[in-house]
Image 1: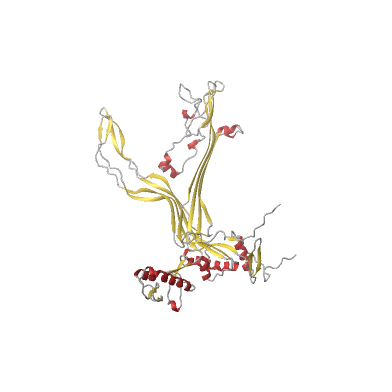
Image 2: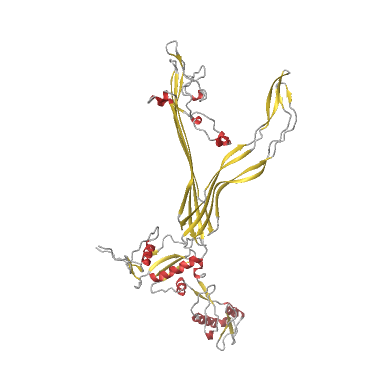
Length: 574
């Protein structure tokens, strides 16, 4: 069966919508088809534009404070003679208002009724002056009435006729009709306007609210979340063999080897030690060439120069099991060295800032580091050395280098962002410049200043010894910087993720004893494997929202469209 025609003209409509309310999607499709939707108690109908709908729908709006032109206590002032008609003028608002003749008559009656309490009995003529002071109105009173005293004159001059305006009356003055049952309520403290009206009238209110929102200045609230993940994984499994001298047939002897350039034999790294000699059982290493611990994992060239990198001395991995043959031929010892280490560091910071559209904002989560830019030269006097018997004496006073011209550098995370709100007030163009600066350590660019000292023993010169006059330390910091410059476009309230600042260092070490390490199964006991992964990743989440000067969202995430009130279902009685 062919599909029924769509819309009055039978044209098909293809739309691509993402993350919008259902009511907005239905209205968009209906507008494209020259139709409109009708919200009923239990259904949503699509009807022609010519069909009138009287159902009342409740809708919530966020409006700027100046939507009604100021507070809803609107003052009206008398500007023409009472005898010649009246005209109201709103204070602080350009809206025209209906005549206030009824309130003028009430005010005149109030003055006539209270005049006898403050004035003497006399016939007089008073003047009521409005805020402009240019037009007056004469109050006529009966003969025998009270005269105008100073208090009454002040009352007449300063009295203002105040009309309490409501959200409904203000909307009616803007041209919005309110059929029976329709109403409007406004909460100034939150800028919330709730209107219950027909769909046609709500469409008119939509246009008024959109026009008011478009005229107010655009601001963007930016929230940035920085997540830095550091992970260090280390795995190691190796075997350390020691083999003492042994005899094969009385004429041929064998033993383990020597350390050579490999890992030296340290008795503290072995569980079995000969108490008489202090040497480990077996003494001679077989697997000295297999690296372990810090001997297998080395720092890069820059880390080796940094002072913090010198805090950990090189050493072998810990042994988890040992096996030895004591008083045997030959004596031997094997130690299993294994290590599985995982270390993770997660750092989270979530600063936020609000800025105008087109204005640059900077978010900083930093620490200040002060360091000297220059050093003074050391002062070394040109004086010879003095020698004594069996000692070294250098009677010179050296002034070491002194730091000066200090400079401050911020270390941490800095985000520069410039938001530009699109013409539709629903998209935001973001120019992002995230930067991460880390302090790695200091490098000493100086070298010690030495003098030549002479050792004299028994009157004979034995040797010339260099004597350090000053270490001449000239430390300069080393910083690592990761920076990205990018431009993206996002919808209002959406989040953009930047995760390109990633670094991973991988080190693998595979050592084995020749021939023995290649034997199937048994060869694993003569191999050492070390693997280290060091990952560092910085992920940034940047969320941008368009807000009003009052700090309220400009665009509603949900439309706030409520269905008509449903009729009450009678209770079922058994």
